[in-house]
Length: 253
Image 1 (tube, rainbow, N blue to C red):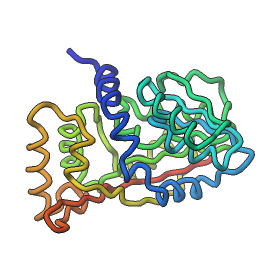
Image 2 (tube, one colour):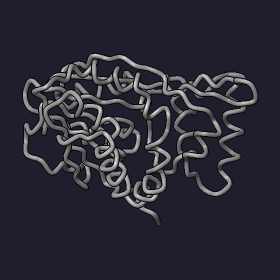
Image 3 (cartoon, one colour):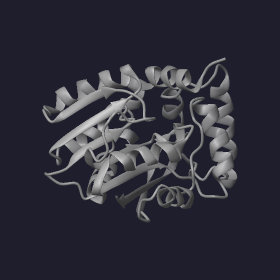
Image 4 (spheres, one colour):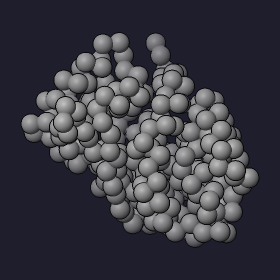
């Protein structure tokens, strides 16, 4: 039986290039929103947890003193190093490793962030507690993740498991906020945006189980009528376009 760790490594090894080159993931407006909302500055040392192909880490490196990106998947870190080289950044360090536990002493960073990873964690509360632990007092913990509306969450998560078998569960924003306070962080400031995608492009960047790509098309076609997924599925010409809800939460340590 495949373990969750094996599913993560399988999915994200195959997704390394498609994810890294996805227009929605690379979107500069979304990256700017996150950086501005974090209030990161030239004195900050940043840890990006489950950094993937390094897109957010490199964006932070343009404004912060130093950034460390950690990820479990070697193929993702290869993409991150390539992006760092392309952008000419000297203030980024990459490390292969897992989130539980994070391999850093207490209070090692002034800003600890994670983007589009919490819905893959089996124990997101424990992951957030680790992020709090390695964040210095007065620093910031920042989480960016899919955040379906409460009445859409069950259907959204059923769809996402089909699209990506390593998906565990995306949480509504209120549940994410409660998790912050549960691990001893202040009540977070919040903002959000929509991650825009086109259905066929999304499926091309996903690696569902054999035959499930057509299941995904059916799920999204059905959602056009009632938006039961909460992704604003709509037709643009002969294509289906989507807008995934994303929550951005930041709290002081």
